[in-house]
Length: 143
Image 1: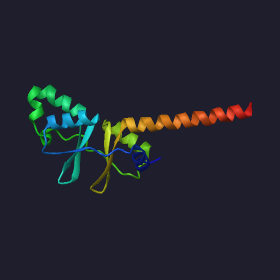
Image 2 (image 1 turned 180 degrees about the horizontal axis):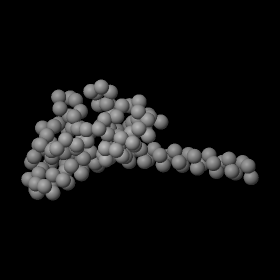
Image 3 (image 1 turned 120 degrees about the vertical axis):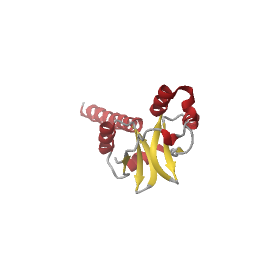
Image 4 (image 1 turned 60 degrees about the vertical axis):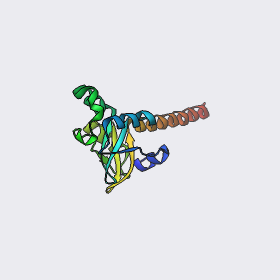
């Protein structure tokens, strides 16, 4: 399975936020959508990802006023991108190497989706369940 196939199975729209919005607005949007990261856009192009981890660091550094800071004031994180044709193994390797739990999926400068470590784990668990069922059927047929 590749990244595009996994994204097609998600059926969820990508939630984005503008680079000039506040960190507080990002936190509210994440909470409302029950998600852990947003793709940050500038002039209709993806530029980064803001995650819960980024918000926590900002609050730890700046206290309650962190929510009023604009997203563009954060250090650039979550810049890793993956192509839709990439394998899930390639995506996992990139996540591991970059230490990011989310990747932007882009074709050129066009945002195609967002891939989380949870998406990959859920897919792997599904594959393992299918493999288990097949092996049980083979065993049952042989005995």
